[in-house]
Length: 242
Image (cartoon, rainbow, N blue to C red):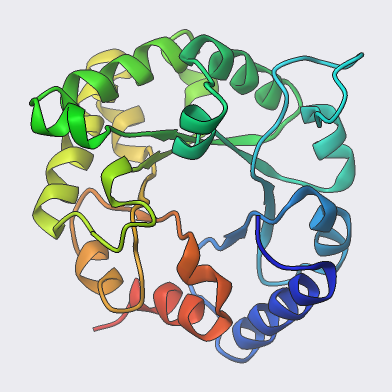
């Protein structure tokens, strides 16, 4: 929840301008702005795709203040973030609720960027693997192989979001490899190998290159560092830097 309307337009224009000058070859760049920006961004997007930060777990009706997956698709969104740790924490979104959101997103041809991750308490108690596996099982594992292939996973160590503390590259790789193993157990090696797993936890221009060199880290879910166009561009290009 950042940027006024004018500020948001300016930031988006700067990102598009940077990428038109130096394209992100072989890299999929997705911008997930607040709802108010989606129609305009979708119309003018050339170098990026547009996603929403959330959607309702109902189709339509008397749900004041909510935005449905159908509405997002009609506004030009191509994807939607589901189950971000802040939504799980601040708004008590449950795995069963997120499963419904995922179904509605897929029914409307929206790719789902599905977030999973553990709290500091879960990690210190050694329950981080069990927590992430439960989130996957209850939120996604009802899907068919075909449906799951449209899911992008985003691992968020909740203890590293907005704290300035980042999981080490080794910690990130360990969890990403574990997540891929859990997916493999459910859907097989082909699906798990093709599944994109993003890292989201205080990723910035200083640590992105090291994180992206991890074999099971397929990209980043960038938060605060994306609010400055130049830093966001540095992160994007660090993925393929030597």
